[in-house]
Length: 430
Ligand SMILES: [Zn+2]
Image 1: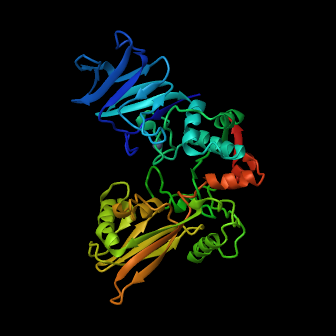
Image 2: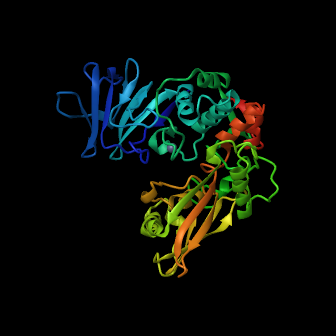
Image 3: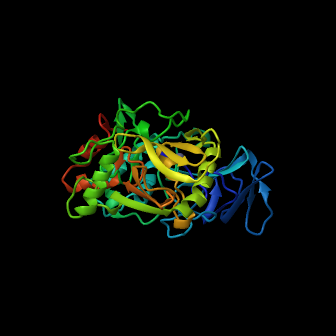
């Protein structure tokens, strides 16, 4: 099966490119736009037309506004860089389509599904993980390619290559034989619910308890929050705990248990340093940045519905933070920021994580939204320091990679593990 993968720009935030430069051996196009094979092609959109420039020649218009390029061997996209490729330009095996899509320069890759999976697995999970954990990732990634959360139909693609939207795909690299085995051993296998590929969400570490879909995500089409629940994306405990889940007390218990008993496994996913973390912010760093960040989130189209300002509309001095509503894992669903000009509310996991972005401590977002706080006030009762304590890394919905590794090492096979993370699901060959 062949799929189209839309290739993102340099920082993975957009599918729009300013310029696309392709290099490879004997680059050619099926429609015959190129008179002979080339080794470098440069594309741009000028005055709403796709332009092609060959080395030493003037730019010319590409008829039909799109071109599909093939090569002998890999094609390297010189106009972008990818982490994981050690700051190098990514190379792809397959055909590259460059198009003018409503005035935007787009680039996408046509590639075999399993070839794509090799790239995803290489980027998403260490090859040193247990064979059964790698198989879990192979099934989740294959299923995700068939049913991404955000449909990419309007991009003329099945998925994109960004971990901020779909799953990370950094192109062709050295494929480890253990990853190769996981892809081959599970060939064609897809996770289904009621006969259809399910939404196979995954993240790195769930910090002791996975979360319900509707507590972390909005509806991909309507942006409605919460969306309708998905029965196979229901939060599961990763161990036997003495405190009821879904509370701040639960998060404190997990945090302290791992901080004290390093050697004792309290849950299937507690073996990794990602399990618990803390971020310290002094009031100056918090004051100088959080109001800008929150105002930006309030202005951006995709996050604006999840930022509710006080009547004053102003962001005053920060008095403190409080989680008003939590999900089954303890994830923050609604965060209150108490300020001198009124209380702001921030909703939804990823928006809450982003609200803490802070260049002073080089933080783009919190590792997760399974958080609780310690406030430190001076004698004037002004906030001096804030410590954010957190559990897990990522959204924690569906499969968690470190949990799969814990289960695999404890002797569970990939079918049992996937049955745990996607209750009520089946595995079918498609
Ligand atoms: Zn995507």
